[in-house]
Length: 588
Image (cartoon, rainbow, N blue to C red):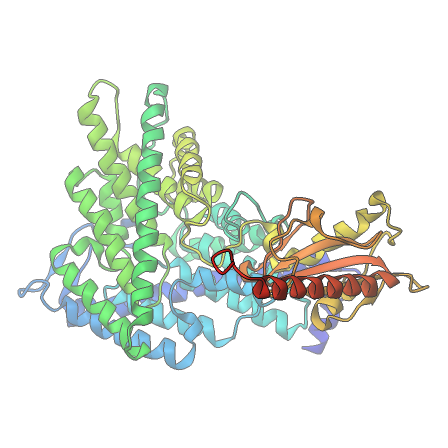
């Protein structure tokens, strides 16, 4: 290992070459992990659904499945036994060995990126893989992208630890691994790479530094999976091209339906998760209860069971009426909320595209009946609905368009895909998202806090304060970790210091331009801890309790500021005493 580290640290290779080489390795592991997960998932279905419950759901033809159900003579009556047992085993695995593996894995990857330097425990991908294969294979409603993303991301984190890479390089490998897994499992390498750069933020912001390593990883992983399982799109869909601009208003209406559906799904998902979280029941048993609920629902609506890609292919073949499609959409929302919200393991992208396609197909059929002369194709609306729904729910409009295009081969529908996806994204508020670990923008991520502080310090000269052209990031980090003032110049005339506003601090509720600051003392950053973000201070910025201010100015200014604050606090206390001692109007 020491020799490997030495070769990777060689100046000839450079940082860019090292990251590309490691991204290729991470992509290879992600591709092999995707193959392994599919094998485990097939084995789990064989044990739980086929042999225990006597039920085989429709399978995807591109994966060797058949678009027919297979039922034992007694029908579906043992399905609740299968889903409950699967939830019980998955819950025991997760809450015994790796509690952070519960829920949908993509959110855990985002949290590791923003708040943990990309660190993921080595056991998490293994437990996530097993628990997800059992949850989905026993009939639970979940997607494959969550565990696959954690396999690639977890290997990237472990590899970075073995090679003693920096946190920045670790984060790049983590997201590259996630891109490889997602690109491989959905046959969408470009979509997977774009997804990991876009999903980190709720607003239209991108982690561009990750893009190139993510593309290398995704292409590698997709090539490995394609070699074993075949290349091409995952679903078989019509190859028509968009040629009816008169339908664009209807696609715009579809975006409203998709956004409303996404809002309902998010509220239902996290609402049930909160109910399970408050329920005084052992954690290991909660996924079993969720599995039982899904199994009982599956007796009446088998469309909600397991991954559901066979049913999705049948939606593209226009085999369901609009009423059944609405039942599929609503049922899949409920089933996924119970399976994953109860603490089970699986992804949410897979269920989301089924919900979106069902809503889109139902909307297209209604439009076809209302406007028979416009040439409405319900299948096209199902394809566009897939992207629009997930764009609104996950705040990823661009990658949703690309992923759906690659998964279905529907390149001719790019115009309505773009219109509906971005409109659905804009309609739903940024804080309504399936991924709670997203932050609004790059400036709000702890990863980039120091970059914005550096930019603020570099530009202080323009505001009249003699600050060096660059402040070393270790100094900023030391200030945040220790709270001790940092000297910014050799002569010690300029310092950077910080303090936090208590709830009763006189500055709470004031705007920055209202503060009584000593000359040449500037507020350069506000760390808003309760929202976990960095606020770039402007004159109208209103301060809140708990804010941590970072200031720069002359060395004497810090003591002068404390003196002023002390005098202001004393004056405020005296005013309070006088007001309490003075008689009220009724007493007089």
